[in-house]
Length: 136
Image 1 (tube, rainbow, N blue to C red):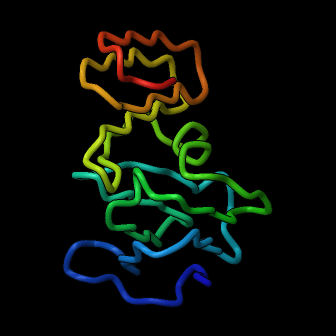
Image 2: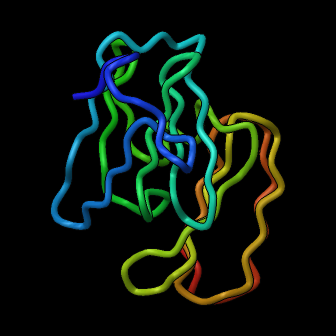
C-alpha cells in the first residue's frame, strides 16, 4: 500500500519502484485524489502519479496484468492508462509482443507487427491494424 508522503524521492524522481513479474497484483494508493492522478510511460515502465508530489514506477508495467486501486476506484492497467494518460503508451508483453494502449484523448493508434494488442482507451480513437496477427 502506498500513501502520499510516505517515501522519499529517489534519484530517478520516483517515491517507489515496483518490479514484480509474478501473478496478478494490485497496487493500492491510500489517499490518492483523482484530480492529481496522471499516468505516463518510459520504455515500458508505467509511471503513476497518485498525488501532487508522489510517483510510483512499475517496471514493465505497461504490459503487466495488474490492478490499481486509486481514489476509490479499481482499474486494470489498460483502464488506468485510458483514464489518466494524456498520450498513448507502448510496452512489450512477456512474449515480446507489442501492447499499444490509448490514453484519455483522441488517439491515432496503428500497428504493423504480428500478435500486437491495441486498446483505444477513452476519447474518439482511430485504430489501424496492418497485420493479420494483431488483436483488438
